[in-house]
Image 1 (spheres, rainbow, N blue to C red):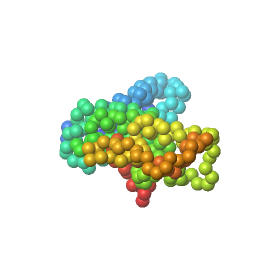
Image 2: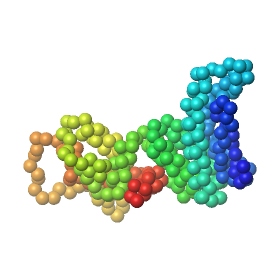
Image 3: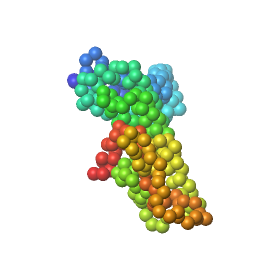
Image 4: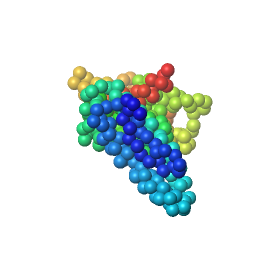
Length: 277
């Protein structure tokens, strides 16, 4: 095919041509190492190639192993999705220019590709896979954050659930929002759950995960040196209460940490923009 760099991987489908991974035109296989690094991080790709070869050999001998055939057909869609993801990342890198093309030849970046596509393969939703793709596109840019932080962000994509990302988006769109505000922003209307309900337990756990992970924090005043100021007690002391602070408190305000803001910028920005639109 003209103006395309083609890498072929046999799909194993009977009587069908092999699937081709189409990457942007480049000199001396610019994207070859990128593609090999990504494919090498996905365990079943090698098994699919071997299975396709075994099935082809059995077909020539007049025998068909139905188990191999079913496994290959199941993974054929996954292979097509993987190829689409690789093409999407490569096209994004192409738009970043020559410096990005040089960057993707570096071992440090290829290590990020391997780690990222390992997480991509384990992801249970297309949304998470899109986050990995978006981060790897940005990581090819020379102005992107440090590689250690990119690795951390890949870990966050792997570790956190879509519900965690919903909280991050809510705080990003509404800095200084309360726990009650976050709950409402996530589409929860009507009467609040009781504090001993599973819904409240889950919400507390999500907030705790992001707080201990240094993604979000309570709003704090900062001095000119960037030091956090202790909260000053103003007015008379509030009367003591027999109950603990609500999971849906409307007093304390939350913000993204600096790391959390970078995570949105390099991972969630495209998703947040589409939601806002």
